[in-house]
Image (tube, rainbow, N blue to C red; front, top):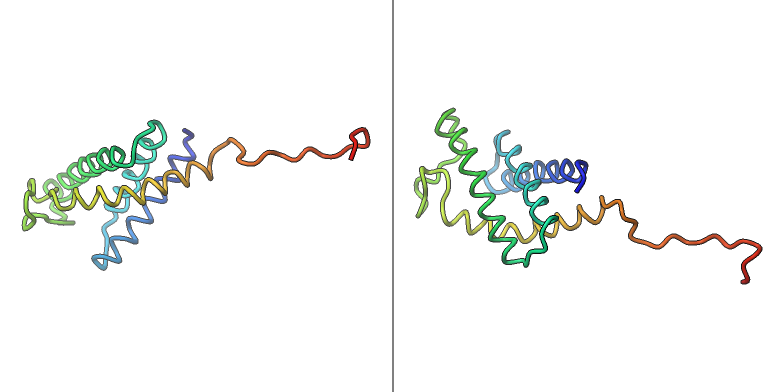
Length: 142
């Protein structure tokens, strides 16, 4: 895995998550854009190093996203008091920063994220996907 692949996946996560959040809530916070980038880079690393089934990839991805969300939530909302989000009214929440319903949503979001990670890997791979054509010389029969 190359640094360029991780950087590209970070940028894709940064922009894609920002767009999803703007579409769903109407706005986003700059820390959520960074979080989206960190999440997709982590998912890219997860999906490129292991041959996981879709279900295992989604379970691991959901746990990774939930852990990152908890970390960012404690910093943003508890320490800095920026009130970026609050899951206090959601069932099975922890400190209002993470909750089971959103962890289930992250599980589902890992399906297109996995496909995006595979696409990034294919597009940025250093291995050529097509066999190069050999030029015809005068010594070779037609």
